[in-house]
Length: 325
Image: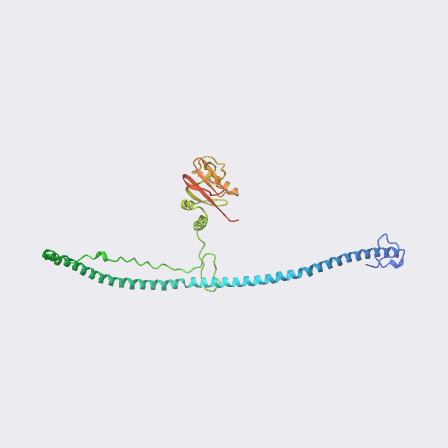
């Protein structure tokens, strides 16, 4: 704190940094006393705070250690699960890699088994046809004999004249052997080969396929009648896609139902008006509760649920499949 500065009245303070109010050594010592008293007070407060923190640390340390231990246990479980997933993934990838080889072997074995079975069957059919003709001839000969009149010569001649009995009823129709399918090894879309098999990954599915698969999953959650009325027609909107259900309605206020949310602002029959249809689809997107719409000759109703569904000719229902945010 002290520096070489020009002395004032008291030579003893000449080596210290002075305030304008410090005229004597006593002024400086008084100022220093006040400074150190405040410093001691501050240090006392910080010491108390430190003791408090140390007490808290002592109390929290066992809890912290317990959490550290639990975290290590959980990490061990996660590492084990991850290793198991990796192992199973590699087993799957190995299976995909061997798929075409296995298919080729299986196809050849199936063809061989089929040919052996049909050949054996054909031999049995020949034998049964011989037996069938023999039995029919015996049946004819037995029919020519009468217990009272004896042998009927005309019937016997007819038996002799019968050249060959029809055995077409014993013919076998064998199914056509299916052609061997083309086999291309590739992993499902999104899965990478990290197991050293160097297998390619399938290209992303077409947008239409993705839509149909998503719609199929969501259909399973809906009433059976909706599943029957579902079509593969979709309308694109700003919040997702709509799937069409033809000749289908859900009961609203007029039918004493509870599915209505609100009318679309576009009134009247707009089923053939693409621009107005899109406006109603957008209104449904903007309404959090909206799950779809019903377009009909008198107007368009936004729906909040699929309760009480029923067949209704001329009504087109569109179910909203929102995109994930």
